[in-house]
Length: 500
Image (cartoon, rainbow, N blue to C red; front, top):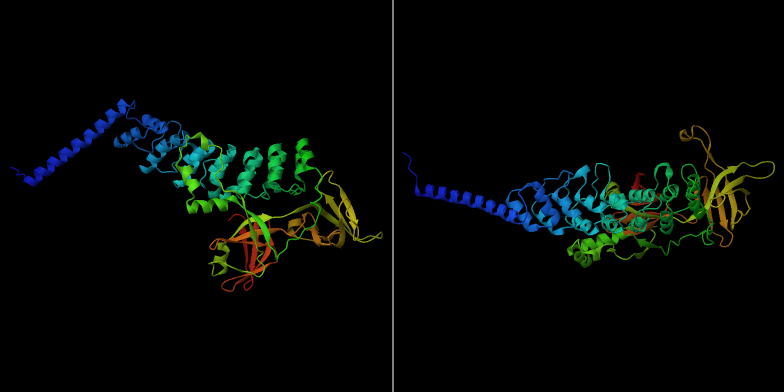
């Protein structure tokens, strides 16, 4: 015969009471759900999330419902709540342990779904809850691309500070699809109008080719260079004309304004004015816990008053010093570390609507000639000698240096890499034009930042600078998509891509 001690009997009694209590609680919550019009099924759980019924959701949790369950379309409770803009449901589900980046149909996250549907307040809320903006669905589309596809400016504004590396791709996509509503937003946050697609096609060329007039206008307003050429040597106007987009070709072929045909050199002593991309402003706000952001975050996604409004800071301008002979602030103590601390955040150039096509060798009639192409109108080509004025401009040919290059790239054929120096006859300022590269009115420059210090500098090719520990570097090249610097002692060359 077994003998039970008092303590054993007490433990058994408590366990029985506990099990009876748990069973009673589940039974009671099931009754409450039924009274509220729900059955204890995944379908009704998902319906409660979509309805924003947090009370019912709590009861489903008591029923030990699988929070990650999905409907026949592949959407989770968080997807449905996000689509319905039910922040109360989203908050409860996340607090209960549901993954913020749970994958739905085609690998779409709730953030992607909200971006695609233009629910900018939900986008903001999910980002603040840690949703990863850089993720892509099964079709390689990020939340930013989906927001652009929907033409939703507000969602683009929310996502841009978290997706700097995707902004240029998003601009190309917007140009291709004719999403003119988001062009200014993307460029304000740092997307480069100089970015190139396959075939060296710029965003302006893509928009022109596909006949998106409003997008062409938006890109021009954002500073797109209508005199750039693709790998076939065609301008955006010629691309439009080839695609039989006559109205756009006419717009882009208009002659340049008088202030365009002038050589202007920036004053290194004075530095330059730079419009800080909104990304930088917004990230500072987020880090500081900006009260305006907090207020919007607490507002209900159902509030129509928040839709379509911009929550980004106003554009601000900063005066940047050129980096020549400066000692920069950085925590990089060896070249490799320093170059990881440096970011290229912007590129600037001022174009001239001219391009040196080739040089023609001297003949019995005279010296060498330069064949110059006007990158507008009928794309006229003129042959000029040293001392001649380029027709319809104020530029005089000062010097022609005829240079040919043989390389594997050109299959052994001579490539014209000649250089022609021109002079602005009104100011006496000079610039050089290189064969097959559109001319610029001044030396291109970029904005460099040391991330550890947060300080910005203007940089141009040929400028040298030092670090606090005595290292010296030279800016060897400034390109639309990258900055190239070299270390004085080792000769090591480092390439820093735009937007890193």
